[in-house]
Every structure is written in C-alpha cells, then in structure tokens.
Image (tube, rainbow, N blue to C red; front, side, top):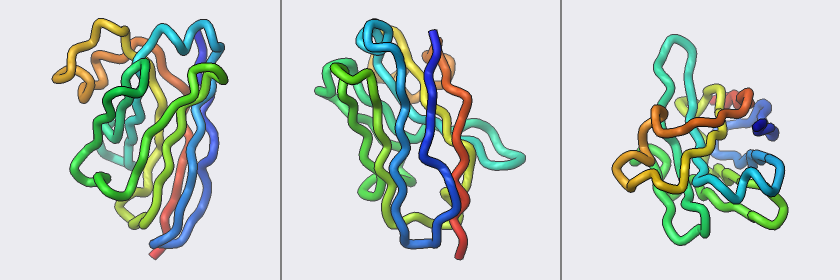
Length: 126
C-alpha cells in the first residue's frame, strides 16, 4: 500500500497551500485518513484527520480555523488546504491512513495509522 503526498514548497506568511495525498482507490476507501507534521528536531505531531465517509473531521488546536481536511474517495485523494500560514507551520507533512475501527480518541495518535506517505515539505517565510 502506498500513499503519495505532494504540494509542498516555499510560501510567505499569510499565504495558502494545498496538499494532496493520493492512493489507490480500492485501498484508500478502506481507511480513515490523517495528516501529521514534523518540524526539524521535533516529534511528529497530529494536524488533521477525516473519517472514511467524511462525516467527522479532527484538527489540532494550532490549525483550527486555518486548515481544512477533505477527501474524494472516488478519486482516492485526500486534501489539506492550509491558509493564513505562519512560520511555525514549517515542517515536513505526512499523510497516513488508519483502520476504519479506529476510535475517536485514537485518531490523534500517529500509532493508530498503519500506512504512511513519504512526506512533503512546506517552508513558511516571515
């Protein structure tokens, strides 16, 4: 199983970026999905997640109101729309999938995700 993340780059503070995570359709439908990020020298942190049918979405407090997660199961794609970017958003962003049995409290933990993409980096300049 393979996830492919794309969309990173250099953006100015206050700008916007869209990340895309692509997977084989028959595989992506079998997972909840999420985004994590890792800044240099720091641990991998939860950013956002979305359930299989998009009925529930979860966000880290630090990105609420600025980031939006969505998915299109027919295309096998998950998106992360990021706006009002800040320098502290600079990180390597990973997309991941968790089993459909994952409960709400576990959606925030990287340990719940069993498939991962390779990461895509965004650098936000001040």
